[in-house]
Length: 304
Ligand SMILES: Nc1ncnc2c1ncn2[C@@H]1O[C@H](COP(=O)(O)OP(=O)(O)OP(=O)(O)O)[C@@H](O)[C@H]1O
Image 1 (cartoon, rainbow, N blue to C red):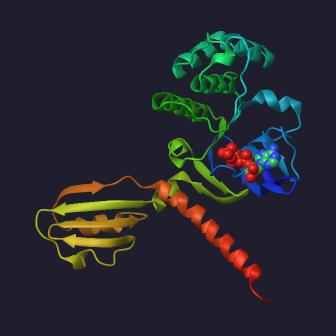
Image 2: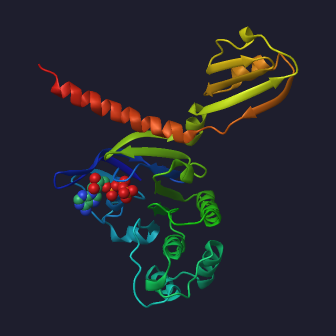
Image 3: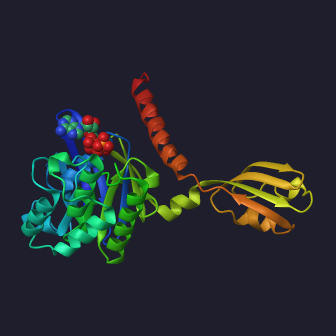
């Protein structure tokens, strides 16, 4: 999937502007941004539910307007409208038939994995069960490209884990996933890359591995005897250093290599490393963007 200058205005209102994005075959791409960032707009454009103001895109190598593409894509909308007296199982059977036949066993297996109740009438499904039915219909025809708008919303933690396992299986079979979220933690474990969108603009695209490397970690070393502060000063990537007797505490930006090598010269009895706080980095992107916007506005207001 590729977009170039993809732009959507709703009248005067910016939905998405100048999106240049490539999602590579076989990757899981996490599409992140706060409410109103433009995630749903992007997804609807890719599915030809809405049409761009300008810009170009290809999906699975083709034009989103090609009706033949639809059956090769699995789509979970952000707001699922599942109504009526029909039972969930009958609805899924119907959709399966429309998509050229889906073995019933596959629907049942997915329902079991997600612990979904398919016997309930659609209009009576709980929010969580609606989301599960939405996921089943997105996965059941084993599409080449899964586009999932906020897939984890309304799922309890165990079901979320199962869903993430399903996403990993899709990747293992060489298929592609785009999933949106406003919480990094929900997508970071399965995503190869994440794109961060805000105010209708793509702010950053990052490898999750690179993001982790950039992440801030708090580290503590405890030694069998007091250590000299000098041994830990001015190490690359180390800040907020505190040396108190036999304990060294600091924050690492990026690789812990230099610190580990410095510590290795003494006898380490205990070590603590807190999980990297990716959410902190994620928020940095947001605030940088705000900062830039403020500067841009200030620039405009400056007298000539
Ligand atoms: N049909 C519409 N008419 C007018 N404005 C719209 C419409 N749909 C979206 N917008 C506006 O476009 C911007 C992007 O919205 P979009 O729904 O794509 O964001 P989102 O990132 O998906 O957010 P959310 O997490 O809330 O769904 C917002 O300012 C929104 O108000």
